[in-house]
Length: 432
Image (cartoon, rainbow, N blue to C red; front, side, top):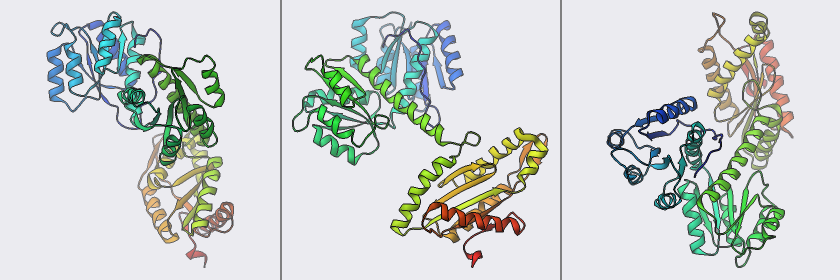
């Protein structure tokens, strides 16, 4: 789409960045794109001609996406665009001037976007589009429309943006699909449908799904001026009038998906310990109580542990609070490595809670012994000195009536471990 506005691109998924190809013959434009790409940590190859483009595509693993200049000296008529699309590369066209007819023709070919070269912000926007579609691969969207033609058109646009798409022909079918796919993040629904229309569908799903968990966009071609307000009041996040163009559709989709992502980031930050990044006390009790109840109802095993770093007060006295914080952060990384499958929280200071569903007390003790070895074999370097940590812990599988009672038992074991000289883990067997 043509743009002259800034755009803050979303974070890349927690994987290696996608491989990108930039095809541009202008040294000045290349210099700007290199600067933007380097600042963003992108993995980019550059080509100044069509011949260099073909060589890079032949020599390298598949490129995820390409920013492609529409007019090159050895490809003046956009041949490089066709080449990229033929190789299934998600293609964004860069052009010096906006041409509505050419833009429509390129969009019909299947390019992702059409961006005019209007300076640094345009290239930031284009790279942000790549971020967006890369992350879209992990996002499931439900398209609901009784018209096969209309629904297939929406599905095509969504798949072009690399969303994982599922379909439904009416509201009743949509509810069944939602129940079978709890990971759906966005629902796009037509208004006029048999059995249950889009308005009724939105009303029904809002009994179960909050706006912050499932975004809903209503669409209609009936042209009623009050219909958009009706949808929004019923619980939709947004509304689109048919017919809508490529840019409007993708802008609305992107806006709603990124709003959900920002809310998720805020929620996650509120659940995390600010210093170590593991969960905080509040989240631990909320999630832990659910795990405790589930284990009790299903008669399954659940190990609970309270862990404390040995002699941590001496670390703070020797290296100061900042040094102690650094050591605590490095220690937490080792805990996350050793207990990667389980729920870890830092309730306060140098103390940690760990919940291990499906693990017997014997298995938990064995795992804690392994993590003790991991910690002792991982010296921490601080202020030109080496620190080797140890920890003490209490671990119990005695459920009792509440999570807190189980933690209290684990905590009593922890104090016995400290009294016995520290660097020790005590479980249920030792309490007999």
